[in-house]
Length: 325
Ligand SMILES: C[S@@+](CC[C@H](N)C(=O)[O-])C[C@H]1O[C@@H](n2cnc3c(N)ncnc32)[C@H](O)[C@@H]1O
Image 1: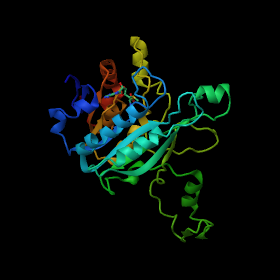
Image 2 (image 1 turned 180 degrees about the horizontal axis):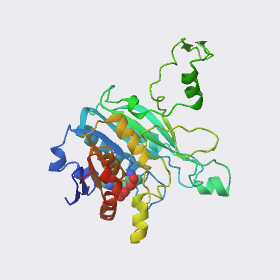
Image 3 (image 1 turned 135 degrees about the vertical axis):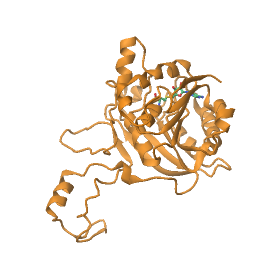
Image 4 (image 1 turned 30 degrees about the vertical axis):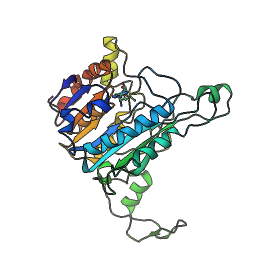
């Protein structure tokens, strides 16, 4: 099995994950991975350049990954999988396939897997799709989010939401500064005590909805503090600019680095190991390095693995812990 990149912080393997995860280097790592963070090829109705499977074939393949992933995890480790929606071929009907995939994955025998929480990643600048129904016939609205499923082997995977706080709203900052607010019962039945809101915790607790861009410039989006960038296009980062300079087509389905940052910080500690079995341009490995974690990556396409080396030429890595690769 070819190993394309070895850095101090991680290793990138070329091959199909379902095969690579059964080889000796990965057998030796069973029970040692703290987080599997990945965005697999999405189920689609038509083939994309990075080779998606369709329908039932996809569903069977997806659920076959459950035992392979589960055995790699530490007992308190997590799996986070990003998946988009798909649509029935030639019909204005959303496919149930992604939901079936989730149900199959978490109910796979002997894995002990369960859904811990679902996150939604909303992208206001998503191109109108499915185009036939949204822009031509105008009978559906824009499909504008992906889901991230946080899955684990027991009910208490390691997690600390204090590590991924959002900045306080202007209102909360004012309240903390003045110490004045209306205590008592809210219409929601919540009881707000006299001093409940007077302690500054450094930020507010993150939500399970991410907006990649501000829709209303006057509204505060308040993304978690330590999410370095939720920028959607990624078009200005070092990887994209260097690909352009070198005449390389960047990976067509890169995830926003902010997503990787958020889950790596939320669910792991420094020096722990993050695995991305569908790593593409290796956004996960890059984020892990920036955050002082170790990483392992796999991708079936040699060219993506090769091009991902550009990420590790980024001078920003020199300034960070664990970056001397
Ligand atoms: C959605 S992309 C991942 C993009 C990545 N998160 C990034 O930010 O660059 C999915 C990747 O899975 C890879 N892939 C598809 N089937 C695979 C398989 N069976 N094993 C490993 N990689 C696979 C594709 O080559 C593609 O790069």
